[in-house]
Image (cartoon, rainbow, N blue to C red; front, top):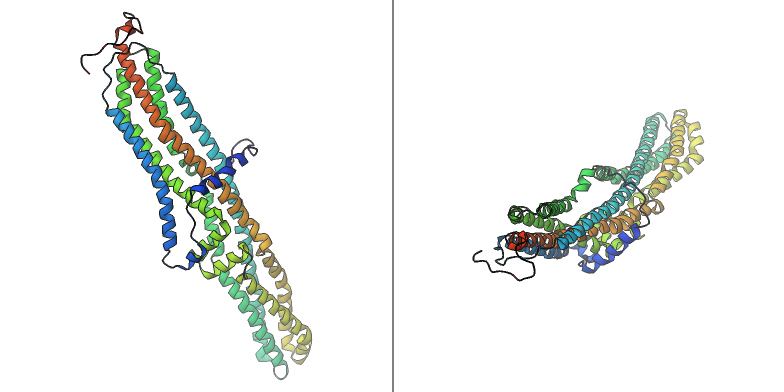
Amino acid sequence: MVGSMVGNYSWVEPYLESPWVKVMGIFAPSFPAPDAAADVSGEAFHHFIAACAGGAAILAVTSVLAAVGVLLRSCCCSGRRLQLEAPSVKPLICMAFMTFTLTFAGMFVYLLVGHKGVSLTMDAVTHAVSDVTSAAEQGRMLSALGAGASVALNSSIPKCQGSARPFLQQFQRQLESYIECVDQYNSDMEGIPEQLRDLQTSLGEMSDREMYSLLAPLVLVLLCCLAIVLAVCATRSTRGSGRCSNCCIRSLGPLLFAPAILIVGAATSVEFGFSLASASFCKDVDTNALTYIQHFAGNTTYDISRYYISGVGTNPLLDQLHEANETALKLESVLNQFGSQTAMLCSDAGPAVTNISAALEAAQAPLNQVHHLLSPANVYPLYKEAVHDDACSTLVSGLAWLVLIQYVVGIVCLPALAYMADKFLDEWVRYQASSASRGLLRTGSGSLQLASC
């Protein structure tokens, strides 16, 4: 799991998170309506994905245009006019400084918000795994208690004759009804703990390397900017001719700068499309979550989710436990009325009656615990933390900051910096070729036309 960042930045987190959910929601397409969940073809969801992809394609096109501009600049012939004044490197240094500042600031914001999002998600999922696993274990315990009582009762029935047998058969019917309810609960619970543990494992495997992999485009921008600054500064500080640096910058255009812009554009486009989908989902997160679950999950999962999210309907798991509890109470009442009488009529029934009474008494604690674990008061806060507070706030904001910074530094600043470096070195080469650089002519006296390129 990704560790937390050093320092306390809680004071700044609201300013980093709050604006983006609303801003991204302005550009996001509408999430499929609830009635679209019944459409087996999923046409509404296909249109939604296409709309999000369309927004991502717009960013991709701008990155292609920026890369083409860098390529065209690399292919342009140098100017023919003599440069009689030394070109200023200050605009380029200012642009480089702004690019570095924005890049590092974007990395910091992404890591700050991203670490918080992973931490919140892991806490909620870990809590959910613990509760659901415990609920499943309690269900198996209830099943084992019922099975043990059933074995004891079934072994005593053949040994008892006369008036004792009808009582034992009544005990048997009610005990089988109890076991059937518990077995149905265990059947519905089967697979849920494993699914949550798989999710927990996937999140737990989100190591620092995988977390930082999304920063690869920004690192690539930093390398490109560093190459530009080093080439320009080396030429300016040594007062060389600049021809080698100029050739290097022009060669890096198609070899490094243009591919880097395309890579940043592709990554930004994918992240922007995902951000649009997430923001649309979060506009009405409860309704959209139920729509998604109804379309892609089974009816039982939808009924359970609707019960917890909207408070509508019933929870099949709790219904089965409630029925099992009612059956156990009825059986306990019958045992209290006729248990002693049955044991007097048939001495072999005594151990079975005692066993059933002990099993029913032992079942109360697991039943109460499962009711608590699966109660809305315990489950809904986990959903709210994971979905409302994390997915629809922290994660959307972190991804939006990453998209913005990548677009600005990778598709705006990097091409501009490459152009400024090429222009500076072009002017530097012409300045070094002029008489003004050797002090033979005064600067400001005009420019001379070269005979050839």
